[in-house]
Image (tube, rainbow, N blue to C red; front, top):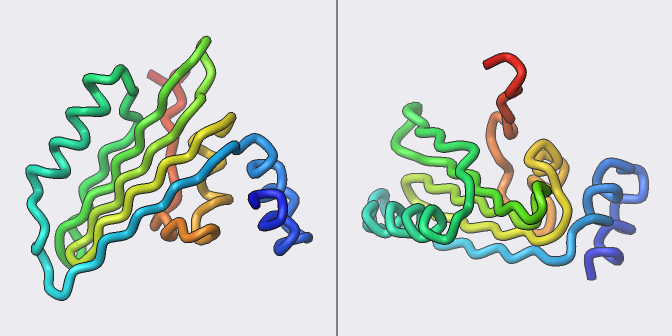
Length: 133
């Protein structure tokens, strides 16, 4: 299905390259009629479960403009390579959870953003350069 989907964008070589390394994508969107109808402690619980399972959190961004919001980016490493990526996007009226399995870098997420039901990741994904620390 991913191969078929990549053919829908024949001129996007970066998208096709990223899809070639992906073995699965799961997207779950939860929408609410009014802001703050979900329990923030549930989002903290998701983060705690990833931490307990040995996943590494690369990003925890809190949005302050036009209401509350959070973007969490988690990766799972196998043999020092990323094997899975999870993204939690929480906005006032919506919570989205994206899980991607396969060989993918966090920088490649920008190519998947807006495709396959994955919400657009505002501001892109910024991965810190460890050599500048």
